[in-house]
Length: 465
Image 1 (tube, rainbow, N blue to C red):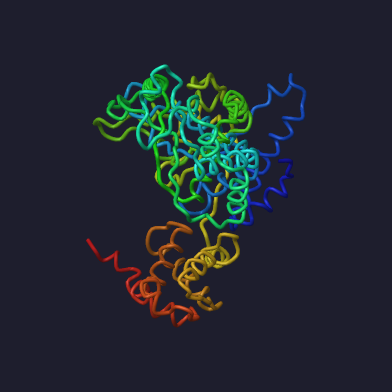
Image 2 (cartoon, one colour; image 1 turned 45 degrees about the vertical axis):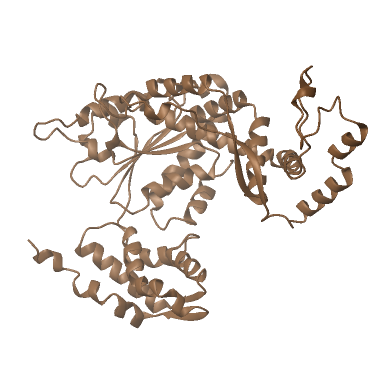
């Protein structure tokens, strides 16, 4: 998508309040990708993305910025926590699984796009399968010399031996099929039950295999077992609405060229992939004490080649990481960016410090974004027939309480608003059926009444040993 840095920031403003410096940095990084793609191939290979490290407390928008950035463009995106990885030689996830996850995400993304493009064609075939299921023709017997001896009282003889009258009875009249097709298209049969045959997606045996910590080995073993066992079908009784959805998915998958999907996904991963490394501050600093803990510095050394640029082997082939954009983030309360190994610091040349949220920021977060918390709560209660109305003084009071709690207790950023809102509406949500078809106004008095325990005991934890 060809977006200027200003347009990117404007799109991010729809979901994220404040943090202008961080938005500008990621907008420029994204635009530089577009600029790089316009260059000649010779110089394009020399230009690598400038990775970003975000520094700031939890709940200020670090992850949301990266996630929304990936959605703006057709970019594979994966979020991982640095603390989940172990040094090479230990049992656990290795850092190369980051790239494998990225490729898997890209394949799902490309496959879903192609299935969406084939939806109309798949719908036509699915409709024919539905009609076949609704009007099944009688099965023909196998044409064998012994077929005549396999006749039963209630079953017709093999078609070769049956009379013209029997053949006519076995055929489904085209007029009946067309009438049924019309009823299907009008939606008159959506809730009717039907028995259909669907493909079994699983294969036996793999579930009992233990995991030895080597993901590549497990993937290869599963692929071998998956190829050994042929696809099986099973009968399922479901509504026509659900059967149509199943048939459309199956038919769309049959139409997709998976080799083409994989090639396109690998290209997208290598050129447009975005990896968000969260909690990177937790693997910074020197080792403290002794014990079985895996070396944090060792994890940094393993991450380094992935960020610098290397080739990672996946079951779909080798993946180059030279042009993948890495965005790291951490609170860095205890450690500092300088505590990371120098080589890793050098691979994140752009450093952005995100600011703690103010009371005014809380007011905007409650109301302005397209997925604002108040909008979510109003929509949730509307499903119960309860109409919520938030006054301005209530919004100010909620913001003030949330900001005070962050200052007096642990600063968890915008996540504090979720805590406060859930406590505020707990009683109302529990007795929602009593307020059906009523309008409930949330004002300052309502907030103070329902949150008086929080206000009163805001600093109580200081006196608990």
